[in-house]
Length: 257
Ligand SMILES: NC(=O)c1ccc[n+]([C@@H]2O[C@H](COP(=O)([O-])OP(=O)(O)OC[C@H]3O[C@@H](n4cnc5c(N)ncnc54)[C@H](OP(=O)(O)O)[C@@H]3O)[C@@H](O)[C@H]2O)c1
Image 1: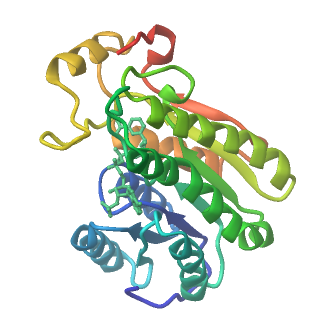
Image 2: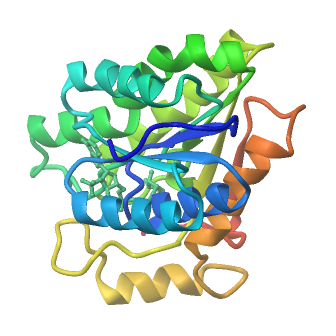
């Protein structure tokens, strides 16, 4: 935690938001006047640096909370700490994720747990923990899904299965939490490649193949995802249960990479 809440701004919690796409979502909503809670697990320095820069722009507008979403007890604690800090919750963005190949013959139970928990189980239980506060505020949930939730990515079966579960969670919770809480998703296409030299890395020839199949002929940016999340949160009062692909049209040309 880095600061105490003042003022009446709306509050958003974005999981896994110290860097990359999550940080872009935080910066975008902060620029629109939101108070932001930056959740992280390992990226503490990046989380602190981001919060400091946002608090320089507007004092007491950004907070940091650490939680390992693999630890079931941490999820309830994250929700409780967030509410203690801010007293309200207007939007939850389930962005944290793990991603790497699990080819048949190589996948382990640990891979299954890691991918399923970060991409599906944790978003469900965090949504459950924050539902009373989101109901009170007539708030919303945005899940960051993936275009591969509905179309396979070779050798990434467990990840795709987990994102498919998150996609169904979006539709199912939209029904269950209506009319008080809207639940939507954003499905990114090729936005930011995983870091090289990590298990998630995608070979450069596969990257070229992927980009060649994008009708808009380029990768997207984290800001493309962020502005779509902001649209769903701020400007879409009659949209619930939808998942918007932000993929340069790639869903329609997807092969079996
Ligand atoms: N990047 C793309 O092109 C792309 C494409 C399709 C879909 N997506 C989806 O878009 C979202 C953001 O993508 P990204 O590439 O920015 O994500 P990312 O960098 O792979 O992961 C975001 C953060 O998730 C956090 N995280 C992972 N496991 C966690 C756990 N057990 N507990 C707590 N935090 C955990 C990590 O936080 P710490 O660093 O603090 O540990 C990590 O920085 C993800 O849901 C991803 O699946 C991205």
